[in-house]
Length: 216
Image (cartoon, rainbow, N blue to C red; front, side, top):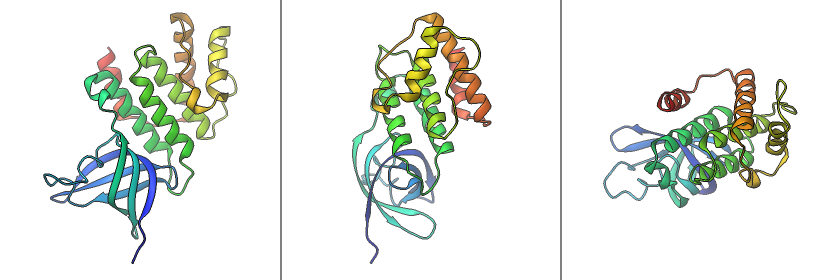
């Protein structure tokens, strides 16, 4: 009989599969990005209904199959339910999940990217940090985790912007969201990160398009 594996992760994507099942894409610390099926998760009262929602973070019990895993159960520690109360924050969160799904790979060490997603979603729930700053911190650190060399911001920027850039690149992930910027340096920081993202990630994110449309 196959052994059940426990993996710490977050649900990046869920979609209907068949009449009652859900197909999940998870980012896990142990195996990177994996696909799993939650059988019967769409049946009323199913214990797999809540753990198979996007943003669900915790420990997932999974059986490995030939091409995908089967979700047996989960101990969810965070659903990030606060995001559902703020449409803009929810869009930012969806964008973070989509970026993580794009950058992650199967059988990679997913610990740093998973941690980044977690602390970034937490930061969206803090009124003291502007969501637009959270977005750019997330994007820049995601580039670093993905192996892109971003030692200095492109162009001539202020000292405050340069310091923020260096801080995001070098500080431990858990301490990323401990600063804010005034409007001038923040605008510079946004432009510099956006230029780097467009250079290194040549991909269109649907959730980013939606986010930008609601910000207009």
